[in-house]
Length: 142
Length: 94
Image (tube, rainbow over all chains, first blue to last red; front, side, top):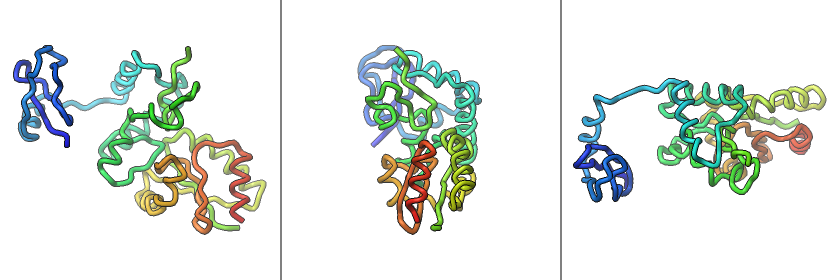
């Protein structure tokens, strides 16, 4: 089960099954202590932000930069998909993939949040011209 | 001709790509698709979810768009496919 942890040195919050062994920010070892979700929420409250479509576009570009895939060079397709992602966040609470439908099982549906773990999907895995379900990400040409 | 459903999503590029195929097939053959948008219409979404046990196993375990579905035969075709494949599938539904 996922829990919240706080680095006792720099205050970074981590949400996951396990606490990180080394804090990625201050590099201190064994620095994470489990905290309540209430404490995590109060800690994060002053830093609440929203993300515009262009900011998300920039974020996924940065995310793909050092990976074997890239954002689809077809900008028209990307624009349509980002419209869908934005609509889904507005109407359904998360950046759900515009090319798949929510099942209404919360944990199952977290797998549809963009970017999803498409590396394991049949449309990408082992394919030279692989892409994620919706085509937002494509394998980088060699 | 049996009822054939096309579950699609407004911002899905694969669905957009399939629409001309669907239009052409309706013109050339005695086929009529019931086009149901699923991300902006909860009733349509609930209908697609109700078919999840039948659809998902044939679509990589997911409810993908576009999905072509015949309730009477429970036959499913999902994703962006060439015109001939869609035609073959649709005519097979009888």
